Image (tube, rainbow, N blue to C red):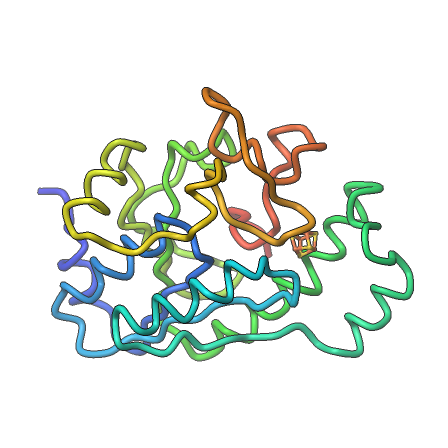
Length: 221
Ligand code: SF4
């Protein structure tokens, strides 16, 4: 018998955390966790200081809708100051190395702080999102952060996600209505055309196999 989300959650000893990055997937994963029998879990976001204004408004909407608090983890201010002095406002677009440096400081390092002391990390990742996510599984062991990673939506199609959101009348980020199919930092995210890949609007100047921010690299130590 294949394990269900509840089977897996029942076996976790310790703190469970859900990373919330304002995707439609995240709101579905949050709803699934709230429907489960897990007594408590943390919901956190990585506040890069590069959010769209719409993201701030949506953050409040989600907190109000679910009666929760989304905990913010921030980058180190000294590292950000140095980064901005070196790269200016748009330097993350000049090279893959610059972009990775920005993601490392604004996302990867704060994620490491967010996951300290956690036993399981729940995400909204799906195989169908991109070629970089095609080999995801429901339950993984994340060696880098030494915890279980649970991806309850791993096999969901785009249609499954839409159906779940509509059936449960969940709030989605307002930029979806303007052609965005994935939500990220303002300098690195744009709307996509009909028929384009759902992550085509993220770091659109890069090759598809590079389109990860370093948060979900399998086997990275
Ligand atoms: S997505 Fe863009 S702005 Fe955000 S952390 Fe990565 S490079 Fe920096």
